[in-house]
Length: 382
Image (cartoon, rainbow, N blue to C red):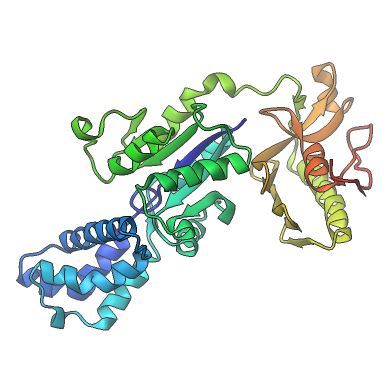
């Protein structure tokens, strides 16, 4: 089963620089007059809002953190001795607008891509709103869909309540991603308080230093991995499972395709699959991305990735996988044209056609010469 890494979002994946900058732009002179730095005001406000978010949840009066942030900004200004009448509604609106446009931490995209390439399934678990959080990743050009993000707003409970991490476990189980307590479900955060709850819930834990700087192990105990940034985190997490990263022995021989050959095989496959999706009356293709919605499963996304010469699948049942064109046969020379080609997930030898046939009843058969693709057919879901 695939390993999973569930990332905290606010402060871990995305930093607050844009919001601090807008506070400086709009209130900098007023803050300077009272010897308060914009960064100090920001964290005074944000940490207090985080506290109120958690405490209202504990008290049974859950309120989304975005609402708490908006309604407590003027109070935070008063706490640092900036009178509320010096902060207008336009200031609050400008600050809140920047909260919806946080910038990614350095190396975040490379970390997500690298983990996925190494066979990990990547998720996010956030105190923030779902649509706002998905927008963060979209603006950063980082692949993450709604099925891979759990918001506290979904369950009306704030972290670090144990129910949040239990919900994360349940979601991973529903998607066939590991088993609770198997050592292959990880939680990544820049906040020690987040990780102690995840650890207690059975996750392996990884702490990143870019917000708290000091893990204070005397208070929070030890975590499984410590990293100064996402580059180091990626290296350490990949190293944990190096022994599992070899291609599956039954996967076949990875074909060294030219760009022309890649597009030939990928386009043929996508065309045949699209035909069957249209027969199901649930398929839609847009710019090389095919969406297949099949109740009650959900939506499948199949898309070409020319840079890696792969086809990527996001399945609501089995999660994301990246498929390479490989040639099955008894010897290496068959990749030159003597074997049978297919799109295969090399980590476990699973064929894309077999998975689609099993989950949605669509079968794309490949011809015996390993080059041409036969027309597809729709089979009963197994």
